[in-house]
Image (cartoon, rainbow, N blue to C red):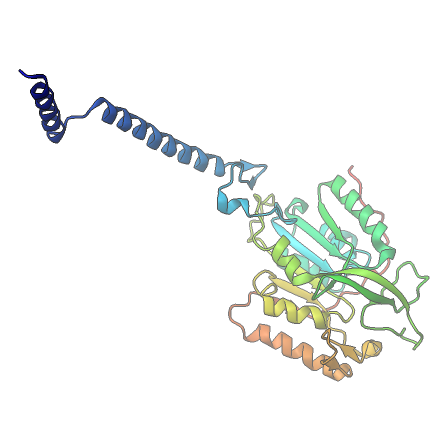
Length: 337
């Protein structure tokens, strides 16, 4: 056979072989590497899912995060089963009402509120306290308390700033006896003392409370509960911020930070007879909305609380019982036995 004819015949036989389903060596090599790649992808997916489900110290952790979980930043409240936000903590006595209730039998309402909302007895490892206090006088006391509680295995985190509806700095006023180490009046809305004198000013940091709750508490990673009294995880807040509640509360409501996170709220709105030095009070930064007197303050407070009452999707319950017992703590900080 002529060489050109022989080559043509070979090409025709090769074409028939391929058309009948036969594979060339190149085809076989391609299929081998394709199957190998698919197998590797499946194995990687299974391994990643397995790693994601790992649990460290009772708290779910993402050891090898996916693209969506990479965006999640750690929260201060991660690992906290229950959370107590002491907003306007003063000397931090409410944390002791929670952790050591038997030492404070004369508490007017808070010890009973903790027993009702969290149950009793409790395991203090289930609780995290975040104490917001802008008064520099009490800073070291809160840091000492953090250290002492940590030695007991309890989580206490001081936030040395005031709560407001914006981040930044703000002028606060010492409205009570400045030389008293147990000062109870440190306000951003009252520039006069109860006796009409000019109050001593001090510039302190403030944080936007609504944003802080959404960033550091909402969606926190829950650990296993230590207590045998099984209950759903809760966030309770005490709000006593010497007039700034008229700035903080609308922001908590409109952002959803209150209704979506706070199970129970206790504290006070400053419109009682002893709060006359807070008025008139600007409630917006532009000065267009001013509460002229305590009567207007009472109306605004009632209107805001009414929104909670009529909103079916709002989980928050509240009490305006203000526990002012134990301005002076009669007990030393605890230590491990």
